[in-house]
Amino acid sequence: MLLVAAAVVLVSACEQRQAATPPAPASAPAGPALVPSLAQLERGARLFQEHCAQCHGPEAQGHPDWATPGVIAAPPLDGSGDEWKRSRAAMAQVILNGAERDGVPVMPAWAGRLSEAEVDDIIAWYQALWPPEVYARWQQAHAGTGR
Image 1: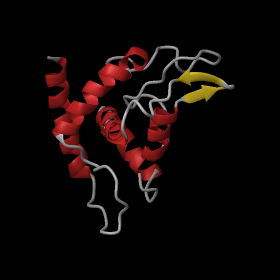
Image 2: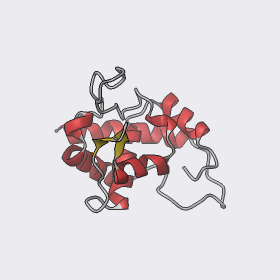
Image 3: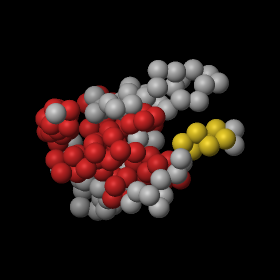
Image 4: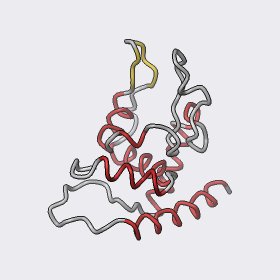
């Protein structure tokens, strides 16, 4: 039931994003589509629940203490945190290679367990949760970077 409700919200968000997104120039680098398909969002939601929700929360809301200095906690990916500051390639690299803080692993590496296409699906899903103004800020910050 949650997946169906999320899909309806995400399709609505995608339609808003599509209306606000100008067409890419013909020379734009290849990569995941800016407006994901419903199938991609469904796969991303499923994969996120299977692999990411335990730390980042079922709605990608992150741990409440994620911004507390000295506390190691998963950040939100729903647009309420700082993830918009990363390019899509940087987001994928964190998922594939994991993350460390002060030499201590704080997120596992998913390379070898998730394909690049699955990582793209996960990113598409949580980006679809972002409010339109956050997504627009991300697009502006990463214009010309190939995402």
